[in-house]
Length: 159
Image 1 (tube, rainbow, N blue to C red):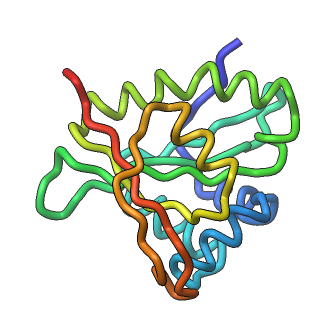
Image 2 (cartoon, rainbow, N blue to C red):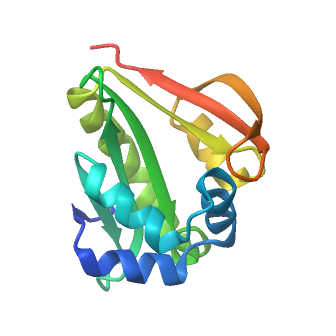
């Protein structure tokens, strides 16, 4: 019962943006000041790859990807933004948790280091990041357009 993944389609951006979890909307605003639509479009255009997780009925649940570092293409900024249906529906949540390890492992075939920042207020992101084996390496107070506390995290491939 793995979560189906597919390459992101442009229509996914609008769907995810309109149904994005409130905590994810707040994180996007705090970090960049952008709307969910702008953030997802920029992430879609810059990610290699950009994927969408879909429910059994084909409804987009989340978008994620990795933005390659401009100086080292073996380092990437991993990201994931989701809808309430990803977290609130037990079936979607279970399928996501069973499938996300293989997705992160696949990203490690392309990138030796995966990293990013997360809004310290986003408890769901924090639990997922810890569960996936990422390490929090620094606190970034007064970060982003809202000057909030963000946490930097990373995971190094052991291949």
